[in-house]
Length: 269
Image (cartoon, rainbow, N blue to C red; front, side, top):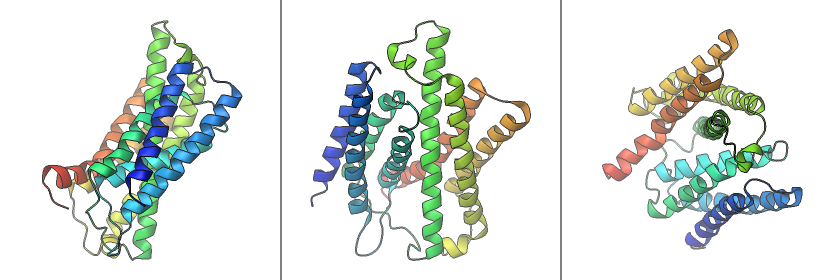
């Protein structure tokens, strides 16, 4: 199947969901929410099929910066879809759907040429899965943080829009944020720890402190500091949001940013 037949429908549904949310101003009925969940499921299936088609090749899996970004958004939206059955978080739709649509289309513009090293190893596959789950949880946490920041800004200016008034209370959103950060931190610890101590078994070469390693460790330190501050000193509010976004920025630079520089700016697969 031509790749465009998977990418364009997925991107179109993501954009359609964002437009529908804006037109409803966040005030959707239970029936409309069920239709939105069904539409998102279709988009996720198409997006997942597009990813599988782009990554696979006879010589082994290919995984460039576009695929990394796309898979991270795809997994984050899978968690978002599951979360939507328990909590009204449609406010994330306006943020997440356009970004997801862009990530799908980037796969068409920047085809994957980077071959994953040592991809046949079971240990590497486990490391890869855990890393992508960590990335996706922190992506969803970053989206939560952005939504909370927007809601807090509107609350302080006494100009709360109808769309923002439909999201859960900030305390509930903050609790969800720390659950995401806590779960992601466990997975990131496994990812960084296995990469540092078992580099040769995973990647077939000794550990090198590249930009990827430095940014990953920096993200781990920032998220660890946030969780420690929350536990010991009750950190919350803007400090928590800023540290979440700073940690996510480091994590994004660790692989996606590094691969973008190599593939797009330097032209090296």
